[in-house]
Amino acid sequence: MTSQHQAEQLFHGVLADEYHFLERVCPAAADISRRVGEFVATWNGTPAAGALSALELGCGTGITTACLLGGRRDLRLLSVDNAPAMLRQARAAHATALAEGRLVLREADALSALGDLPDDSVDFVASAYTVHNFLSGYRHRVLTEVLRVLKPGGVFVNGDRYALDDPAAHLAATQDEVRGYFRVFLGEMNRPDLLEQWVVHLFSDESEEHIMRLTPALAEMAGLGYAEITRHFRDGVNALVSGIKPWR
Ligand SMILES: C[S@@+](CC[C@H](N)C(=O)[O-])C[C@H]1O[C@@H](n2cnc3c(N)ncnc32)[C@H](O)[C@@H]1O
Picture 1 (cartoon, rainbow, N blue to C red):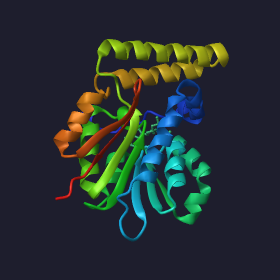
Picture 2 (cartoon, rainbow, N blue to C red):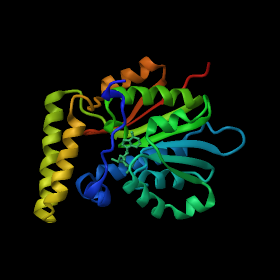
Picture 3 (spheres, rainbow, N blue to C red):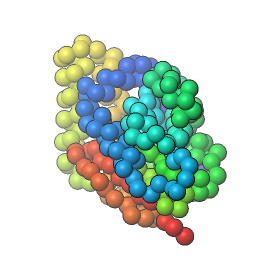
């Protein structure tokens, strides 16, 4: 197995401990989290009886987790993340749902968590701003596993950073992001430590081994066998995408 297929630990130090500054540098993220939750809340393929089983990949501090849990009482959610500092915050934010048994939080990388699940066992796999962090080979294996664990008719919904297909437009969007980091972290907050970590992280997102462009990403899902692949929303690099596991 090459390094392209391995999980990475990208969220630690100040980036993880002060992840809440996301709302200052990427206000669109909260909207995407809300859209993921709304998508799940309004999905009408609910089974006749029983709770909906859902898996969240890369729950981080639990922002999208809250949108998922808030949208439906009948959700039984397993949320996984491989960064202890992020999960600690998710545990604190979701003490009630954890105590009620509506939520399980597990420290695991996405591929390992999927590997533990049986075929055809999950109604939803949801994620926000996580899949773009994966190395491309690892991402391919995760998408393959998501399809395996979904029940026929089950849905994968991903709100994420999908790079623009036009490289020049994408470069301009990325440069705007960097200007925003400088404005917030240096101009408004005088936090060069955070600026450094966010810029370093952006270089990871933008690298050849990680970058997730929208059209190739949709084609990859189609190639793996997802059906009804839909881009529901697109604003700059932010997009909401879903695909279902076909009925056999
Ligand atoms: C940008 S944060 C998004 C967090 C959350 N989904 C949200 O909407 O705020 C990405 C998260 O994915 C996690 N992550 C990255 N790679 C992972 C992997 N291979 N397995 C599990 N979690 C991963 C990181 O630790 C981080 O918490």
